[in-house]
Image (tube, rainbow, N blue to C red):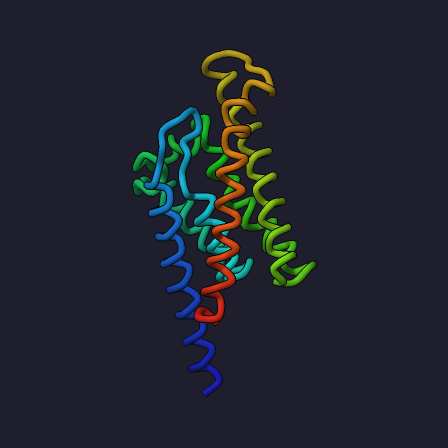
Amino acid sequence: MQAEKSNRMKTRDLVYCAVFAALIAVCAWISIPMTVPFTMQTFGVFATVGLLGGKRGSLSVLVYLLLGAVGLPVFAGFKGGIGALMGTTGGYIVGFLASALVMWGLERLWGRSPRALLASMVLGLLVCYALGTVWFMAVYASTTGPVGVATVLGWCVFPFLIPDGAKIALAMLVSARLAKYLR
């Protein structure tokens, strides 16, 4: 009986990870083209970790990245493949996994209270911004020429602060309302 229950939980975990990887992909397709496209991916990542917890949420983000890496069009603008990950915005995409891992780590330290979840989302977003900005600067410099940090922040981070704050608030709301149904 215990082995059957354990297998059921594993199957349920796999299904949740697949469904939430698909949710992140759908959120990526909601896109406004810019230097770094404005998408709902960050909402998808935050809602995924908020609802599934750090372990299953991070696995969902990893599955999403792997789907994109093998060429499925799950990234913004219906792009996929290693080329999309190696481009100027690839650091922000990889940063989603870093965000999820930060949120998982902080969940283990602070628990899953709303205050801890909010703090982990904000810190996860900052990690994503940092990784993505450094990556953007390196790729841009190798293909176009050097660019300053302030310029890249102006292109890739500052325009997203308020929308990403709204996405965090929405993810917090969704997580609070729906988490009880996924446990």
